[in-house]
Image 1: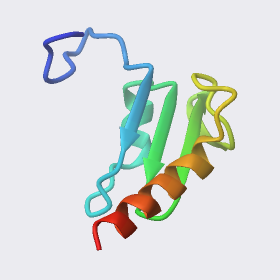
Image 2: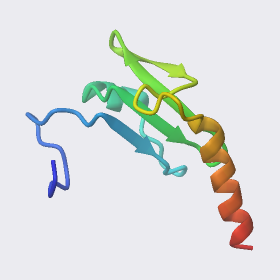
Image 3: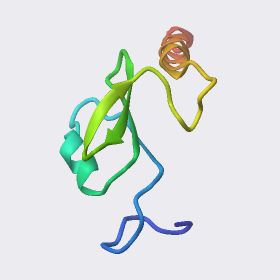
Image 4: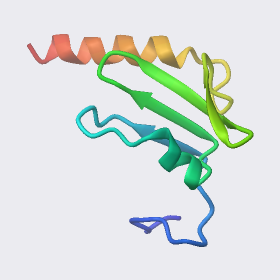
Length: 87
C-alpha cells in the first residue's frame, strides 16, 4: 500500500486504523464496512482499542498487534506529557 493515498474497492483492509480526530468522529460501522481488524480511537482523554469479531467491534484492553504493551495507559500518559511540555 506504499504510495497510496486512499483505499480502492478491491484493496485489502489495513491491519490497524487509528482515529484521533476528536471533532468529526467516524462511526464504527464505517470501519466494519472495510473490515479493519483492529481499531484504536483516541477521544482526547482515553485510548479505546476495538477488535472486529463476527462483524462487529468489541472493546479490548489489549492489542493483538502489540500484546505486551499497555497501550491505553502509555498513550494517555504520553499525551498528557505533551500537553504539559507545550505550556
